[in-house]
Image (cartoon, rainbow, N blue to C red):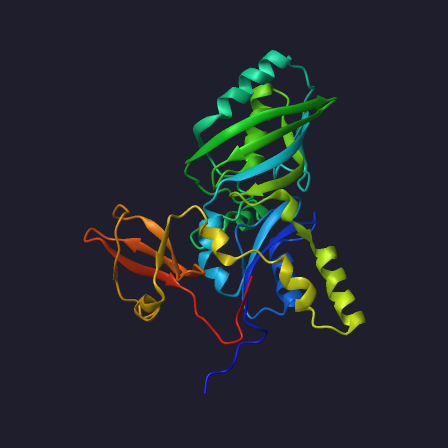
Length: 317
């Protein structure tokens, strides 16, 4: 007999406002315990130094986390000029110190270089893997391995302020963009060196900033529920966003209730109005209940790709 997973069936997305100094995995495991969820996953790690938006997927929402990993991101970053570190942030050791002496015109010129689509060589202190090991493990052993440049897109790069030797920028970029590398490269272009001292992720996809919640707030709600002797889910679950928000940008195909059985069996369904090779959100009935995602094929058929598992005690936000 199959063992029941530990924790409850709860499906949804928590927009965690991660604190500085903690790993993304620590934050993930803490959120999972607070919600007593049977399954959880995050959508792209933030460095321990970084704060801000870390969507945590619970339950069946984990099936769609990749689409948030692939989403655009926005960051607020402050760089300290005049010092270059081995990690390109303040967690590393200073390897070079130089005077800060450039004009605003030169800064504006160098910032323009990063806008649009460019090639970026990832930092050795990244989680990208080489021969099965994360690059940062090689870096900690003093080993440098070859890294291929990758295309990235910076949709917006806004100058916020320059106070003394601290430069603050707002950056809206594509997946896989390393802000630390942008800052390190910019410092070299300015001739003074630079490293990140503050990094805050302010947006993932179209999720609203004001919907974020901190670990401290979640823990306070858990403690409040225990004091009031009520089920923690009463206070916690209203914070969850629906799991289909992870694929909110996909076009929707709404099918009648009678089609639910066939869809959940993985059978292709006749559908019209969308081009082939198009990923879609599948909803059922007048209530537009989300059941998964599918893809249109050349014959006008909708083939289910990732379907949620429905349980009697599943709660959806």
